[in-house]
Structures are given as structure tokens and as C-alpha cells.
Length: 428
Ligand code: BHK
Ligand code: ZN
Figure (cartoon, rainbow, N blue to C red):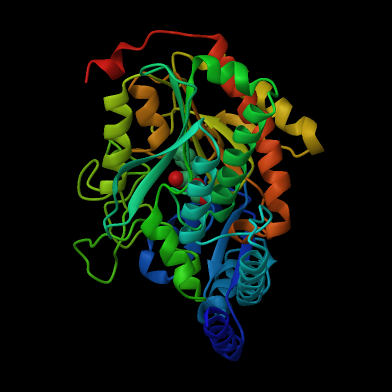
């Protein structure tokens, strides 16, 4: 039945014919940057900025709806802004991705197995979490609360015992369309479980002193929405699904909604914008649930969040152009973690503050964690650098996860070996 529905939907997509393109734009001057920034500010344009105009060193990737392709290309040519076509036919990749998912789901059902080299829907990820938790005394599934659409929010707790031990937070999927982050987190959960079971360093040592909390789907409503239909509207949904003051523009950017310089530059007050911050800090139940959990726990020493794409390993701040007080140490940890990542198969990441490597952003989770005294706060932007962007083929999941693990386990070990007191968390 499920397969049948999928085939019918695929046929509908096929019949739509030509699709959107993703253009990669190479700004060559400050003037070009300004033009692109103005273009992005115009949220009614229907353009979907996958990366943002910040400096001439970094390309700007825009998904352009089919109907606007001619006009946008002309506009760029008129302004002498060079560009290339990064993805020629988004629809085609989208359909391929879906066909693969449907085929894989069928195989998994028949063989009663779980394929780490495939993308999965929320239901399957939640089932995977149950299976993992049922297999090992190490792991428990903790419910943090519910989403706007009343789905449960779960975090996997890896613990060998103790009371309110020091802990490390890892989340993925706060932006719904960044599927590689969820898939990486799934693989990581399994890897941590396996390394513990097989007594492979450094996991048992880390877990003898600290707990690990891993949230695979931080934005369940958004994630479900990305699976609901084959249209670009769904697959490239990033925000939450709550209603806003503008009914045709639902959703808040959950990475602008934290109580950390909320409302500052690098977030929009326009509900129709991709980086809409929401009406007030923690207006989104998903953010509130996570923030409350972390504050109530009171003993987190590290906060790691997984996004995609651009291959960056970042630390605070995002909201301002100044170095954090712990800059030398955070920069060193990130640099070493990056070396470890690179050693696996040569993937090149860039290291730096959010502000300097990606863009100014206020109300983000990493800034919140750091400002709450969680010193070791990091954000990953996983693969790739723009060949596929958010449509990273499933055959890159395992290698992406594995190299991420190299970096992550360096960070975990370092945090474990460098205890410190945090009175900002416990004072709340
Ligand atoms: C990631 C983590 C912390 C702060 C900023 C970011 C960059 C992220 C965002 O919210 O703007 C960009 C991103 O994942 C979209 O691809
Ligand atoms: Zn993101």
C-alpha cells in the first residue's frame, strides 16, 4: 500500500516536468554582496537562499523556482555577477532520493534490518531509538516534552550510572531539511553503543565519568513536513510548524529563537523569512523544551549541534564580531578535532567562529549554551560544500558520519579530560 502511494506520487512529480535550479553565485565585490543581500531581503521573491551573501570568499547558493529562472539569470548578468548552475534539475534529484528511500524501506521491512546508508522518516528513526534502547542497559530514551503538533521529543541518554553526572549534549535536525544531520546522529548513536559494548576507547572511559545526551530529531514537526510530499516546498522546509501572525507563512527558525541576544542582528522579524526569529525568545515549544531540560539538568559541560552544509566546525559567537573569552582554547580544540576529521578520508573543513565563518546570527543555540556557561559549545556544518547541498546522496551518509565521529570523539575526550565548574547553569 505504502509503495503504491509512493509510486503514484512519483508519477505526479515526473509529470510536472522541469524543475527548479540551484545557482552558485560568485560575488566579486562589496557591491555584488549588497545586491545579493537586497535580493535575499525580498522574501516575496520565492528565492530560497541555501547560503548567504557575506563575503566574496564564499559562494551564494540559491534555489530558484523554475518560473523565475530566466529573470534571475538575466538580473545576474545585467549586474555582471558571475554564476554557475550547481544543480541543474532539483526535481530530478528529489525524485531519485525518494525512489531510493521507498526501495530501501521495502528492503528493511522484508529483511527486518536497519540500513545506516539510507535516509529515514521520523517513525523509523523513533523505532530505531527504541530498538537501540531495548538492546542495551547503557541507553534510555528520555522524553523532553511535545512539539507544537504534539509529537514527542526524545533524547537518547547514554549513561553508566551516577546521579546528575557531568554531561554532553548533541543535537541534530533543528533545521528540518538538513537530512544528513539526522542520518549522522543515527549512525553516531549506534557507534557509541557499539564502542561501549566492544570496549573501544575512548567511549568506555568517557562514559565512566560523563553522560551523553543525543537528540536525533530536534525539530520533529519540520522533519515530518519534509517527508510529507515530493514538492520542493516540503523537502526544503527548515523551520518549525507553528502558526505565526501571517497565516500563509507558518514556522519559526528554531536556531534564532533562543534566549541569547534574541532580536539582535542576523535574524528576521518577518514571519515569511527563512530566519524568522519568532515573536519572543523561546516562543517555540521545541526550543523551550530543550532549554528547560538543559537548565534543569544543570551539569552540561559541552553542547554540540549538527547542521548542514558547508563543512565547517564552528564555535561562538554568532551574534557579534568579537572573540569569546575562551577563544584560544575553543579554537585549539576545534582545530584538533578538525585534524582528526580530516585524517579519516581527507575531507576538508574550515574552523572559526560562527560570525566569521558563516554569518551574523543572533538567538542561536550555541550562543545560548555558551552564554549559559557551557564552555565547550560547537556547531558542525556537515557535508558537502555544494555539489548536492541539502540533497546529499545517501551513499555519503556513512562516510560523513564516520569522519564526524573522529572530530566528535576528540571533543568528547577533551571535555572529559578538562573538567570545570559552571555556576551560570545551576543558578537558574
Ligand atoms: C549554525 C549553527 C549555529 C549558528 C549558525 C549556524 C548556521 C546556520 C544558521 O542557522 O544560519 C546555517 C544553516 O544551518 C543553514 O544551512
Ligand atoms: Zn542549519
